[in-house]
Length: 229
Length: 217
Image 1: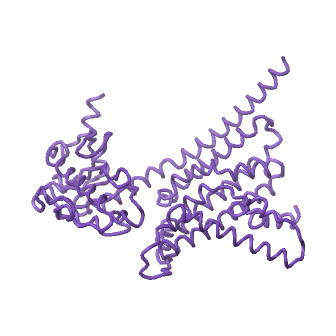
Image 2 (image 1 turned 180 degrees about the vertical axis):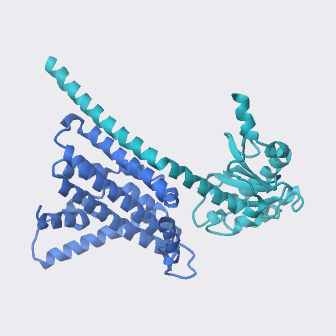
Image 3 (image 1 turned 60 degrees about the vertical axis):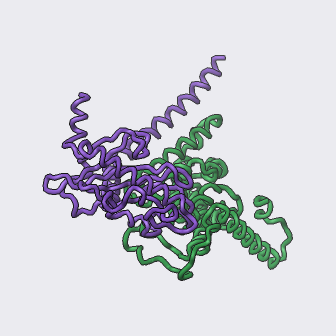
């Protein structure tokens, strides 16, 4: 595997085909858990882990699975991996599990996982498939974290609150109070806030892409516009 | 026909194979995490209990000293619940009950209430709720100290009519804009205290759950 391929896969996952702001897959966790940074990052990383593992485990068996039953087999493997992650989280990060518990099983239904398996891991060798799952997951985590950060600042006036849930007492002092004496802005914490902030993020990303294209003087329709529309 | 059967069979076997492998991996993970999960759950439970019943109130293994309570309209429970009993030097000292306030602003509010043997509330915590964030969620100790006002409440301190929010002529504080939530909790805590009065003996009965278990054997 050449370095360029790895770069391409990473670039695809993190920017060009970003699941959060370009492919717009995986909206369910995007809206539900992005009301604070800690929730967003934790679920994002859990999804990344599941995507990388499912890429790594489905790619080697792709030639043994009959075409007619590939979807049930893929789903079976994804569901198993998610449950394993859930058990491990329950055992070793209990307080975080309490917060995210109900969203973890939803990773199975997150269409981005199956979509990448179908589009990539089912057609490529193990290493690229793993990197792709990892990159796509990180792309999603980045969007989730940005969304979570913006909504937390708008809604609560803080940043990084509650990190001690995930990392123990050492993270207790991480809370940054951005706006002191803030009374909260309810809309930002409720689901509409997620839609509005996400809309702004997509707009921002499209603006950056378009500007980059103008600079390179190449006139072509960007993949962002087609898939976001 | 024969070829079709063979292909179908092969597909089915393939599916079966992956199911078996998946189940085996799951069973393995379950078995290595089981103890740890049970332990974390117990620690979390004890942590919550210690918020309402301070450790100085009991010296027994409170999590193991339980009594199963049948569903009760006074507690608002629709199923059996488990109550934990604390004892100090062998004498009953405190009981931790689950109660549900059915009439919150957005559905049920799950509470745990600790009542000392003398009938004084030593603490109340909201365990589950769906009240409006930023408005009705001040009942959560993480957001506000409001729920602490029940500490020390008893039939001696409050008359029957005092168990209402101040707006309704009672003694319970509330925050403007969200009255339904504290009203529901005050009612539920009051009703739990009545339940305690009526069932005190049963609540503190020695080895209640062990006896019940032996009875069914």
